[in-house]
Length: 459
Image (tube, rainbow, N blue to C red):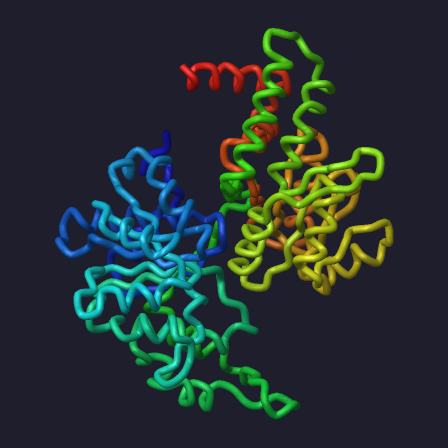
C-alpha cells in the first residue's frame, strides 16, 4: 500500500501550498495526484486546526461518486478518512449527508439544492472545487444559478476554498474571473466581471466575442501567482500513468458477472494457450468498453453503457484544450467515439493526418494501437494518451506509447511530461489486462491468479 513517503516532490508542493493558503487554486493536469495531495493537506491540517472537517468536495458526478470516495483506501496514511457521496435522488442525498464522514462529495448539478437544504445552517468550513472551471460562469448578477448559490455562502460560511483544475490555456482567460472570485472576492482581477473584461479584453471582429489583449495573459498570471499554484517541472524520463475508474451500471454488472463466471468455468483447471485465453475474454472487454457485438457474421453491435465515454469527456475537459491521442480497440469504440466527439479525427493511412496532428490542427486523434506503426512520430502534436479500451497485446501497447513518449518528446526538443490515462471498468477484465501490460506476465498467469482470488472471495 502507498504511503505519504510515496508522494512525488510536486505533490508535496501541493500539500504545502494548500496548508499555507486558506483560499487557493491548484493548476495541474489530470494524473498529477491533486486528489491525494489535497486529502493529505487537509488531514494534516486537521491535526492542528479544529475547523477543517467536515469538508465538501464539488465534482462532476462520476468523480464525486467514485474517485474521491475510493482514493483514501489506496493510501496508508489516509485510510481512516470517511467519505460520503451525496448523489442519487433526494432521499439518497439526505441519507448520505446524515452519515458520519470527514468529507462529503456532491456533483455540481446538486449544488443549488445543497445550499437551499442547509440554509443558514451551512456546515462546511472547507470546500474543494474539483474541476474548478465548472464555476467559470459565476457573476455577481445573473450568471449560472449553481455558482451563484455557492457564492451566497462563499465568504460568510466557508473558511477554506481550494480550486483544482488543469492548467488554463490562453483561450480560457475569459473564464478565470468567475473561478477566482471564490478565492479573493475579485480583489485581483476586478470586483465585477465588467471591470475584468474592460481591463484585459476587447471585442472580436464579430462584435460579440471577447479576445484577450496581448498583455492579458502575462498580467493575469502575475496577479494570480500568489493564490494559484501551477505544477511545473515534472519528471519527463518516464510517462506519468493514471487510471480513470468507471463503474458498470447495476444491470450491466449483472450481465457481466454471469459472462465472467462462465468464462472462468471454462478455464478452471485447464492449461490453456495464450491465444485462447485472450479470445475468451473478448466479450468481457467489449462489455467493459460499452458495446457488445450482437452478430458475429455482420459485426453488428449493441451499446450497453456510456461510462467510458463520460470519463473520456472529463479527461478532455480537464486537459484544458490540450490535444489528446485516444487509443481504441473495437470498431464499435471508433463509431461511438466519433459520434460523441464530432471533432475527433481517425488516424488513417493518409500521411497528411499525421502532419495535421503534429501541426496542432487536430484536438482529438483516434488511433488503433496496431495501426500506429514503428517509426511514426506523434510527439509534436501532443503529450497526452488515453486508452479508451485495452487488450492483451504488450507489443502494441508499448508501441503506441512510444509514438509520443518521453524519448520522442526530447527528440522533438520538447521538455514536457507524457501523461498516459487508462479508462478502466472497476472489477472487470480491464484490470487484469492492465496488470498483464504493466507486469509483462503471461495471459494465463494473470487469468488463473484472478480465478484464485475470486474463489477466495466467494468463500
